[in-house]
Amino acid sequence: MAREAGVTSRTLRHYHAIGLLTPAWTAEGGRRYYEQEQLLRLQRILLLRELGLGLDAVAEVLSRQGHDSAVEVLQRHRDWLVRERDRLDRLVHTVDTTICNIQEGREMTPRKVFAGFETNPYEAEARQRWGDAAVDAADQRMQGWSDDDAEQARTGYVRVHEGLAPLKAAGVPVTDQRVQDLIQLHYEVTCLFWTPNREAYQGLAQMYVEDERFRANIGGGDDALVEYLRDAMLVYADQRLDG
Image 1 (tube, helix red, strand yellow):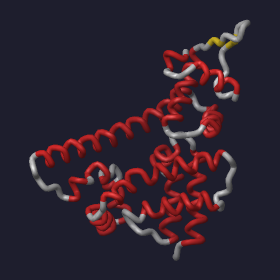
Image 2 (image 1 turned 60 degrees about the vertical axis):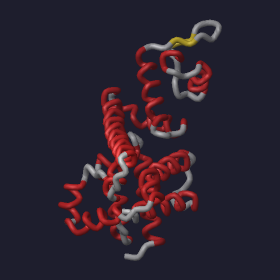
Image 3 (image 1 turned 120 degrees about the vertical axis):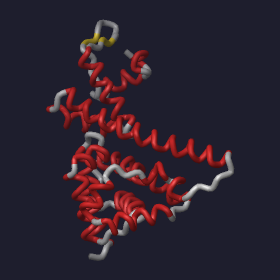
Image 4 (image 1 turned 90 degrees about the vertical axis):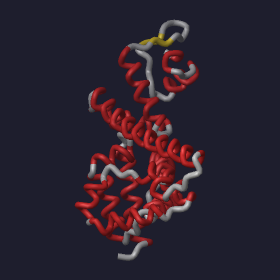
């Protein structure tokens, strides 16, 4: 089991000790035996770990997913993995294009330099919801990004989500300064694209929960994390932003 999953036997023993992965049965002498059900559960654990969740958060997610079928859970994970693969493919293409242009001595426009970051699968919907002017303004901002801005846009939201997960698992209230510091980062990243006022930021927070695409992308199956982010954003908007 350990060899095929690419983990250590010590890891399996630890998962057993904390109640995360119980063997099908344990023989005399302590040898643990696993069947199909445990194989699938371990796969789900490792997928959630790939999303950056701590063990406490993984346990909570698996508990909340208990009423879903294994196929439903894996389908959600697969959808996230496909989106991540597509995102990485776009970034690889951008890097390949950059290398080619540097080698041939050609200049690159900001749009081409940041092509892997600005691709937005929701652009058509955004134009319909907020209008061409708002989307074009965000486009214009991205073209003026510095290297630091581009790095912030690429990693900022992920840092926020990864930072919130253990705080939520530990029961830290959304009003806690550690949580609000992460929301400050979230707001700063958002402002790279557009500058929401209080009402707009509250609307964004609610959309994260109500739109299943954002909910899946942010929480990776952990809806409670998305709700935690929303609640923290609402506190930030109420305390820090103008209407």
